[in-house]
Image (cartoon, rainbow, N blue to C red; front, side):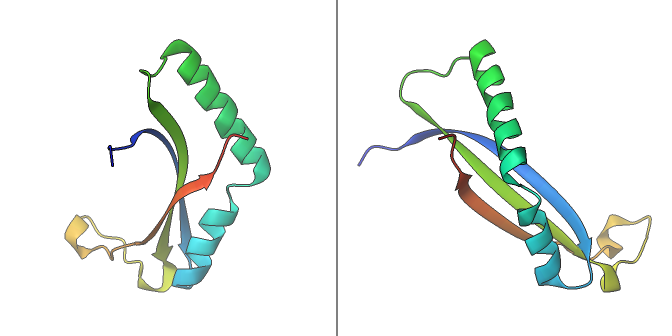
Length: 96
């Protein structure tokens, strides 16, 4: 099976939340059909200026990042910050 050649457009949404699931859900639901249409138009404009080589497919992914509000501790040293919860949704929507 030959490798599939992909060019990805990735939308990243970050939310501060009280629970892990709320933040991830809020981030995903922020990519509304209107936002999807906007991203598709931006992708079309980009690809019009920068055509892809033959054999490439385009894919739209969404990454939701959730910082849990209860564990947020402002600090100057990055290692003190809590790690976020991340959800990556490959092929979250298509251009059709």
